[in-house]
Length: 182
Image (tube, rainbow, N blue to C red):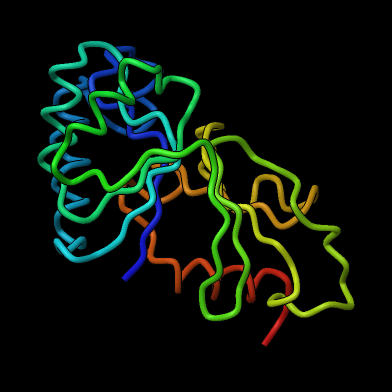
């Protein structure tokens, strides 16, 4: 299966990260995110992390990353520095690190990015399979559709999924329901 998530911020020891997510400290936060991830991801699953994997102590952040199941593809976020990218590339479970990614899945078109990106005219007369869907993170919104008024933008932030990676098939169904397509 294919899953998406964004903005885990492992090791980011600032209360504006972990407190809104319901944790007392960053260690409780990180332990629970790892547990949630591994409760649904299998080793053969593909997971796209849409940026901001970690911040703070790189050794600690990498130790969190290495505990995660799945074949991880990382889309670079604003906190994913060149030195962190080199560390990600050395992790056994990281397949690649990219600036952004376009791909097709069951005839649906996706552009993966860290930042919300306008990718479609959002023409109401076209079916969803004829549109480009942006899957992103960055804003720490708790609403998958926070930018739907701007275009086909779906947020995969940890904050909008209670800390769990989101199956791509579920994202497609949610978008279809939101725009009223059967």
